[in-house]
Length: 70
Image 1 (tube, one colour):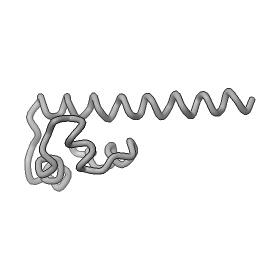
Image 2 (cartoon, one colour; image 1 turned 135 degrees about the vertical axis):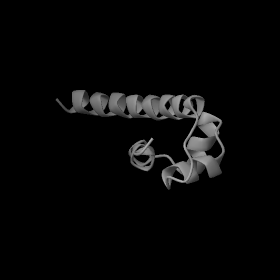
Image 3 (cartoon, rainbow, N blue to C red; image 1 turned 60 degrees about the vertical axis):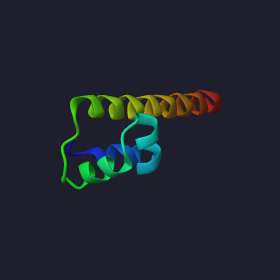
């Protein structure tokens, strides 16, 4: 997962928060971001589910604000 740091940042998550929400150790998240380890398929799925859900919620809030200003 080459773009993990970018995705995490876009979702507004710290490494610690992402690790907790995805049930992956913070060390694994950190090492994966540096390219030192490859996450398992299960870890990748868990992380992507968390990130996608948070980005979906953010998009909904943005849409709501835009609809309210129209």
